Amino acid sequence: MRRLPRTLSPGQAFAVAILCLSGVAAFGITPGTTLDTTPTRDVSRTLELPQIIATATADDRYWHEERVRRGDTIGSLLARADVDDAEAMQFLRTDPAARPLYLLRPGRALRVATDADGKLVGLRFLASSGEMFSVTRDAAGLHVNADGEPSDVRVTLRTGEIQSSLFGAADAAGLPDAITLGLVDVFAGDIDFYHDIRRGDRFSVIYEMRYVDGEPVATGRILAAEFDNQGVAHRAFLWRAPDGSESYYTDDGRSLRRAFLRSPVTFSRITSGFTHSRLDPYLHVWRAHTGTDFAAPIGTPVHATADGVVKFVGTQVGYGNVIMLRHDAKYTSVYGHLSRFAPGLHDGERVHQGDTIGFVGMTGWATGPHLHYEMRVAGVPRDPMKVALPAAAPITPDEKSEFLADVAPLVSELAVADQFPVTEMVAAE
Image (tube, rainbow, N blue to C red; front, side, top):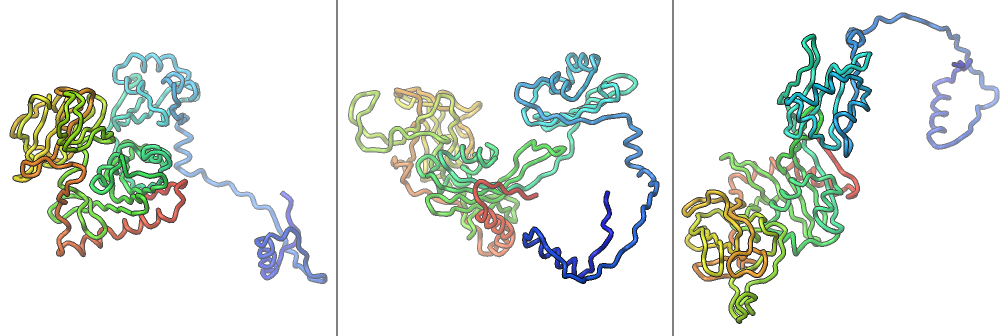
């Protein structure tokens, strides 16, 4: 390397740095300025090899990482890792314990260790179950071990904007499907995700992800979320009450958990609403339609819209396979035309809001697959889409200060998300 025979004084160096930072491409030094000459000399010294490097060098292994590509096999992965070991390939093909290695998910990492001759001496692979599979080689041969590796939970913040659909925006933001569905559940009492969603609506979600060996293996809880729907911002914060129960609340302590869900079927389409007179498509006569019909494919899960007790499960004329739930002395819900019931469901059984109680069908007087859903208040049918539904109890005044202190950091995180363009994804651990 060529050495500069002169050096600049501190003041000159500062001036040069300022000029460089300001984008000036050429500069000069005042004529007559004398620069002191600093003598230089070469110094060569032998350094002792650190113990950690010496140990790694003495271990005659070469670790290689490959990402699973679509269409990959264990053979193609090992070939890319320069494994030349017919015995190992035979072992992986025939040993039952190695079967998870053939259920490869694109994007997952496969770590391979070989010796200088390309023989397989070690392999690590995170299975879909979250277990870490490892292959090791000793004097007795190759062995497979499955370990429940310790996991760490990371908190992630993602934000997106709807252009065509909620799931399309969630995919673009890298949001796991389980979190997207959770977002729908959190705001189901305030937002009709079939009718109310508009292009330009925004969402931000703070949620947990579980990682094993640096790989994501499972989603956790939604800790906080914001959904800006048609210019109205809805916020939710998960809070654990002193009694240990967890629920979602608005920033002022109002519970987001409704006593009743508006819809017993997720992402369905209303084909017929509540009316006192319509032409019945099955009987071809004018009569009242005392419920709401949700079109959905046969087999779609039907959920209890509120906590309650099974009043009737069986078959009735017109309804076909039907379930009736009694929620209290005032409210009853009815679910008709089911293809089948949840296994073991029986009269007198207690169910909880969101439990799957049956599956969409077209039994009884039905001309196509759909769910007929009724809400009865004091025995009188009411429009399920319009009737005023009670909300769960809010945070008590005694708990309010503790709640506000606990959710304050999450409020700040959501405020950060508002400052980022939707094309950016923010992650915090």
